[in-house]
Structure formats: structure tokens, C-alpha cells
Amino acid sequence: MRYVSTRGQAPVLTFEEAMLTGLARDGGLYVPETVPEMAPAEIAGLAGLTYEEAAFRVMRPFIGDTFADAEFESIIARAYAGFGHTARAPLVQIGANHFLLELFHGPTLAFKDFAMQLIGQLFQAALERSGNRVTIVGATSGDTGSAAIEAFRGLDNVDVFILFPEGRVSEVQRRQMTTPAEANVHALAVRGDFDDCQARVKDMFNHFEFRDRVALAGVNSINWARVLAQVVYYFTSAISLGAPHRSVGFTVPTGNFGDIFAGYIARRMGLPVERLVIATNQNDILHRALSGGAYETHGVTPSISPSMDIQVSSNFERALFEAYGRDGAAVAQQMQALKEQGGFTISQGALQALREVFASGRASEEETSATIRATHAATGEILCPHSAVGVKVAMDQPASATPMITLATAHPAKFPDAVEAATGLRPALPNRMADLYERAERVTVVDNDLGAIESLIEERRAS
Image (cartoon, rainbow, N blue to C red; front, side, top):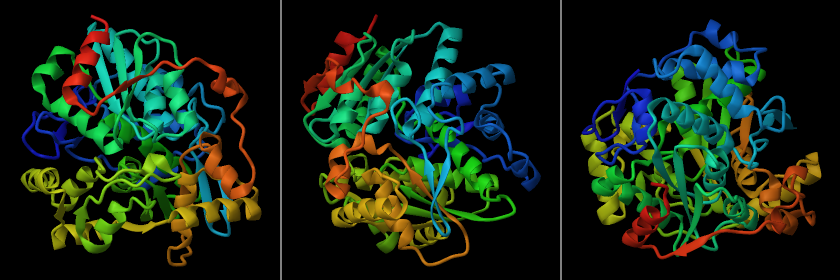
């Protein structure tokens, strides 16, 4: 299995090389050269397996000879051992043909744990074998950072620096990043928004002298291994509802497009996915792009669903690469226009290709709160504001006999203020996190300045 860049000018890599590299040297994102397909009988054979067994079968074709089967099975087992539900990703019915896929039973109570716990184990295994050390730098709008720090804290061979927008994440999200005491993890509060954080990370990857000097690696959803790990729960949930003999639909609250692109890969692998619905909050660039064909940044407006407060959705580049017939030069041209002009127009052919796979919708702040309130009243389920965006958009879709699965991306206790304002109830953290508000914090506030951030990383990383 080989991996190519969405911009067509970077070296072709193995799975291990693509995983440890993160962002391609031409600024693009790595994708598999070909997407392996699973026959209907193979998909049906996943029924009744544990989550870990299904994960092995779904991901195995993508990793080539990077890990032997027994080693990969052991890595998967370690990755999900700390989850708080035996099903790992259970389904809960909330309507006649509507289901929630609960993705918040991991160590940091968010869907990012599915990918990050796995990638932590993959990195550790690969680096132990080579004896190398890497510096991981990531940007987060809330959940990626806490999941990364949890996955890599205390591991050998890795230093982790997470950039998050100061004052624009929930208190629980912030404390999950700032309270771990291990010396190899560092939380950096950037004076700016998430797009600023993400831009500085990309700048570091494109500053090749710095990148090589500190052995930079990335674990944002630009990293292919992150997307791959998320493909698995599309299969397990669809099979629970009758796939491959029955089609399913998915609605995905998304800001950076990685989670829903994983659904696209599952569809390409042969999973009968009838609809992939992009759900956005008021920062609705993806919905606007799919509706009108213009991908134009309008600035980020803070919301009660802060993990979706994004205008530059990195993984949308992967979808564009497929929509443009894997024309790396065309994608590079669009990304240059985005950088220089703040947007671009999707060609009619590419837009049609996207619309054949994806639908979209948006939820306002008022609609998000109303959905939290109404869902709790009708079902007893308490939604986080991101999951509520997904539920609202799913309910707005045309009626269909195909079951709809909405991804519940975070535990409501991560956003207690928004939930309490909507329902009058303040969700409690699980017992294992009950003392989170009492733990000492360790955080560094930094300016939105590339040189200052790079200097800090070089000063603090282990030699």
C-alpha cells in the first residue's frame, strides 16, 4: 500500500512513512494510492465481532507490511482497552429511523479518542523499532488536543506541543490539555482563533529547516492514520443496522472534514452508504461551498459548539482531490487561491461529484439549544452542542426509509454551560474525571507568531 499527496509533487510513501510525516512536503495531504474494496461477504463477516476484531479487518489492507498481524492486533487492543463501554461505539435509538452513534466513551470523552489512542500506539511501536524521536505539533479547536495529550503523555520517543485558541475552548477541554503533569506534553494557548493555530502548524511543516531539525510529526486529522481509525465505526454501526444487505445514511457534525471523509472512505470500500450529510454550525463554510460552489472564508464566529468553529477545513482538500479526478495540480491551484485570496470557486464537474456523495445543512445557535432541549424531553438523551447540530441537520433531511445514524461526537459534560442553558441540567463528569477542576494547570500563552512558537518548541523539547 502506497500513499500519494493531494498536490501531486511529494514523494510516494509507505503507510509508516505517511503516518510519521503527516503533512506532505508539497503542502498536500496523503491519501492511499488506491482504496481497497471489501466484498459484501467480507462486510457481512464483521457481524458479531468485537470492535477490535472489526478494526483489524477494516484497517489491515491499508497498513501494508508496516506491522505484522500479531503486532497490529496488540496495538489495537491497547488502543481501546481504556474505553468505558464494551461496545466502544454503541448505537442508541432516538427516533423511528434515527440512531445516535455514541463516540464519547474514550479517555477524553470525544470521538477523537478512537483515532488518537490508536495513533499513539502506532507511533510508539514504530519509534521504538527505529530508535528515533519525534516532535509532535498539533492544532486543536478543543477535542484533538486533549485526545493527543492523553494518548502521548509519558510515552518515550515523543514530545507533544498542542496549540489551542486562548479563551475559545470549553473549560473541560482546556483542563484536559493543561492538567497532565508529564514533562513530554505541552499546552500552548495561542492569542487567536483555531484557523490561526492550524495555519501556524502548517507553516511549521512548510519550514523545512525547522521541520527536519526537530523531526516534526503531525497528529491532526491531516494525518492519514487519524482518518483511517475513524473508518472503522462507520462499518460497525452500519452492520448493526443490517449492512451490507441494507443501506444506511450518516450525518456528521464536522468542522475540519476528517470525520466525514472517513465515511467517504468506508463508502469507497464497499459499505452501502446512501447519504453522507455534512452538519455545520454558524461557521458554515462547508454548507455554503456545497450549496453554491464558492469556498470563501468569512471569519470565525465563536459558538456554543467550539470544536466546529473553523473556516479552513483541512480535510476538504482530500475530498477535492477525489472530486477533481485526483488532479494534484488542480488542487494545488485551489489551495493557493485560498491562501492568497481567501477562497476559490469549485468547478462545476467537481461540485457535481461532491454532491453525488455529500449533502449538507447548518444549525443556528438557537436551533442547537432547542435540539438539546427537545431531544432530552423526548428521549432522555442529553446531547453535547456538536451532537445537537448533527441531530438538527439529520432531522432536516428529506424523509427516507434508510436508517440515519448521527455521530454523537462528545460527552455532554465537556460542554456543561451550553447543556445547562438548554435543559436546566448540568451534566456531571464521569467518576474517573471527577477531580478535573481541582487539578493544577500547566499552560503557556503565546502570540500568534511563527518564530516565537518555533523558538518555544526548540527550547522545551527533549534533546
